[in-house]
Image (cartoon, rainbow over all chains, first blue to last red; front, top):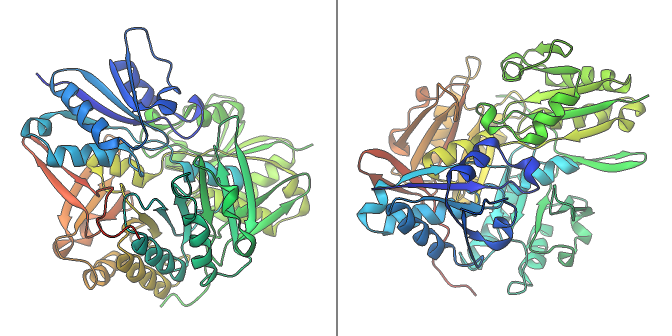
Length: 254
Length: 254
């Protein structure tokens, strides 16, 4: 007998940013696996089991969830934001790819959510209004050389850049070096947004030019968005500045 | 007296993918401006005004919404998916940037949503599980040369690529040419996902290798996701294949 494995995202903020589809998956599940602070965002019933684990144990968590689902449980793996963006959906797919055959028969339901960069963008204007990319700055999962090469190429391509996992106690220097690399390609006045905990009570939005961007303004809960040379700032009296990237770029159509 | 201008996204699918925050903005608004099919996704009350306009009239719509909000109305500008991704939030910011001073004083509330690529990714596995980008293929808004240059650079960078606005009656050849460009950089076996209407009753998911990718499989409601050289396919007996991009890339940390 096989159960169901839901992989959901809570959205970046409070329950107001969690879709009804994700809420429905929560109500149908009995076992919840995830990083503690993400599980804390759910209001579980007494009959629902909370199995918290550390943020860096994603593959172990995916495997544990598949074992439970294979034995017939309705299991919910919980990410913050969207589960498909630097989160648990890829870990679950990887576990299935490398696991026993029976894991391939599990009823897998991945539920999309609002990922952090979208919530940060909405709070500040529309910096992702034109072509953009999302890059994880964690060199726990890929070589730093790959990251630096990607940063150069996407900046040369003129894409707005959203950086996930920008900094942590174990990775204190990477964001500063990323800014240094981007300063060799992008104008010093390019807006950089430090979007912390968008949609939550401890939200903090900060905008500074790339020339002055200070990595110490970021923490683990921050998504950093670096504009393109097209990105603009709109000043508003008595209100925070808007940052947006115009939809239109002039030039020959062909 | 100034009203409020909400800019919301309905999510890509049915009401199950629309956040409570967006539903709340709808309930508080009196005037709704948007492309007709997006407005059709809302269940409006008799006292709420529906003002539909064509998909290509985004700046006019933004200006009309700002005029109404400035005169005190609670106005809701409606996008599909997320309003910040190739949608109305940038058009509203642009209108404020270039409009009369009084538009800068409007209470602007942008509400994030689930954008199409996240919904497509969730249906098929986790293709966006590692670094990725989103590029609009519409050369109505930027020169084709910029698009081709960006495609080459992001493929060289090893990013997964989500293409928005891949094809339309007025733009029939661009997607085929994009595939040709990507075939010069990426392996022929790179998975290409045609994700149509994810989360809606007429949803259709199709995966084919880049070497055989056929632009005619896409329509205006399709988001096309092209994998990276790392992207993998997991076969499952009696279930659709999973497509995912591993979180981990081997190599020296530094």
